[in-house]
Amino acid sequence: MINSMPRRIEAGSKWIVLPMSWVKSWQDYIYFDLIMGTTENKPDWDAEIPEAIEWTEIVKPINSRETL
Image (tube, rainbow, N blue to C red; front, side, top):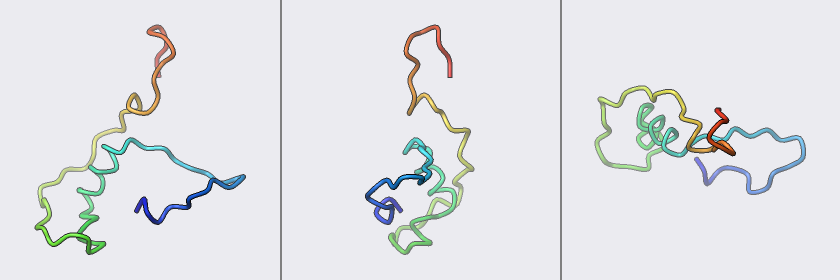
């Protein structure tokens, strides 16, 4: 998925930034590797829907009094 992303950011383009840990959980949940044919391993059929995104992995407050 990441390999197919554009390498340049064009003016007016829109991006969504997500924590890689959340993306991995989502990929497990939808059996991404199995769909893409990039694995021969048995998928984790018990994968659960990812939890809410934890933005503190991406954005950090400037000081301890600020919250996200």
